[in-house]
Amino acid sequence: MPLTTGGLVCRLLAHATPTPLPTREVLGAEPTRRFERMSLLHDDGWGSAWIDAPGGPLHRIRDASPAHTQDRLRHVLETDQATARIVHLRLATDSMAVDPLNAHPFTDGTLALAHNGSIVPTDALRRLLTTDERAALTGTTDSEMYFMLLRRHLSESGDLSDAARRTVRTLRSTYPEASLNAVALTADSLCVIHSSSLARVPWEDFTASGLSAEDMPLDHSEAYFRMSYRAVPGGGWVFTSAGLGSDSWTPLPEDSISTVELASLELSIEDQGLAA
Image (cartoon, rainbow, N blue to C red):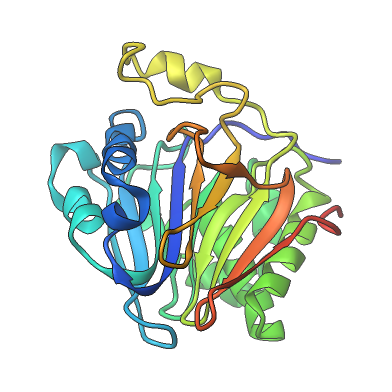
């Protein structure tokens, strides 16, 4: 029987450029500040993974503390340089602990994944993992199990786009309404999964936050799960979940996988064949 899902309110950001740049130069000063302010709502931790150059090592930082109570996220976004970076702001599902081991992105040193969505209940998801994959889990989130599936498919195919497609198909038959929105990074590719057309907007999480209308991020409405992209002046691409406004952004197709080959910065967007 297909399973319904609860809410998980997270924000995603990803970019790739020909030379190392801080996010502030890729995104712009005001949108970067707007993304930082979203941590007032998405306050259950944050993290980032990046590479300095195509083919180079994958780095990660993550923290379970609210980003707005410290300067580390601001430093990462406004000062630290990368040729490709993914960023995640977390607002946890009620049953999943706020803990450093549950903070995104998840990585094995060669692949990193950050997820916005909720794949619950997790019993069926756990059964999709092998014994070794279950033993390798370090936290308690559905998102880490999602990472394990993507890692397995990547090891089998060697192609991040193909691995993402296979992972979405694996999950869709059991979780048709889950948001599988995610950003993934390897030394060679940046992948954006936009698959959330049936996901329920978590209105109750917005209300429970107690934030004023002034502090509530933009587009926290029916467009909440929308993901968009735009070209970066000077070359490259940047992708974002809702919250930065819609001006100058192009929405990604509802169910699509976008892949940037980091050496060439060639972008491909596949919006067919994601159904189970």
